[in-house]
Length: 68
Image: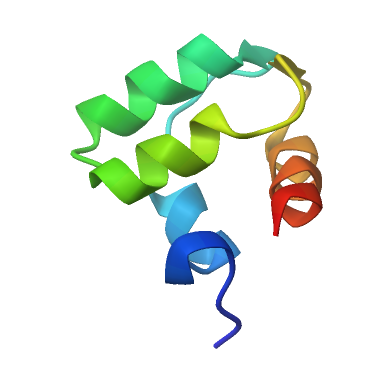
């Protein structure tokens, strides 16, 4: 399994973003991750995403790849 930022794989990050309605803001992503009981490391990773708006999960993962 590929590990990314903070040792978390992209799939692991997406697990905590299930049920997000896109387009979504970074704040929307953080709120959903909190509802899904994401650990602080995942929340920190979302905070570091370079964009503030995301059209879908692929855009989140693109941003995730930019902060590795």
